[in-house]
Image 1 (tube, rainbow, N blue to C red):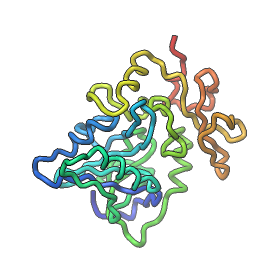
Image 2 (tube, one colour):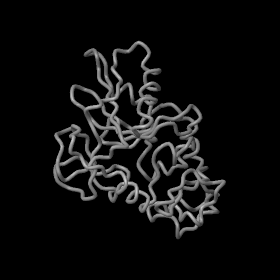
Image 3 (tube, rainbow, N blue to C red):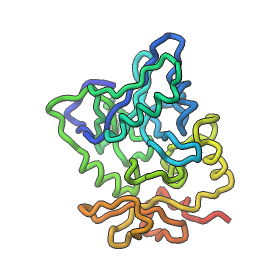
Length: 252
């Protein structure tokens, strides 16, 4: 986390949830490690999700380090309060503060490199992000970010991911899951799908005029694009990004 920079513009449709220890005995990374899909004790930022017990997507976010042993979640602003409430259910009587930090924002730029933030852990071409103090003069970059993200075929957020099984959202290819970290909510079904190679559907960004309405999770008429949840056999390789190509061969 750092002060703002003129090179980065803010994603105003993102919010920051802060998890902080209220006692020296509390370990925030350990707490979150048992809940989310990725290893938050390793290098950060990391892309992760909080799943249902069946392995279906509930919230996706990026996990960032914070001072004094805390962690920051870069998440959708419209579901941030719901995410706080859900995480608080798992806190039980642990002395952990979980709250939306209204002083911080998520900043993005297409160019990578330098000391300002870190490359997006999902895909290098997504650009560079960081968490910083909000400034009244911030320029919004949400429309630019949306267009760029969809051009790379990367889905995110509740509207696009829905309650789809996490691996069907391309979580493996986008570095959103660890199969070595141990247990977390939804881990059993997620691991079973991976080891049995039973990920038979995928989220793909397609031209809107080629989208299948029954399979569509969300449409962007202003961009002429949609996100569809399709069987592998129904995906035109021409519509899929190069990073997804290896996953489009149905398992035997």
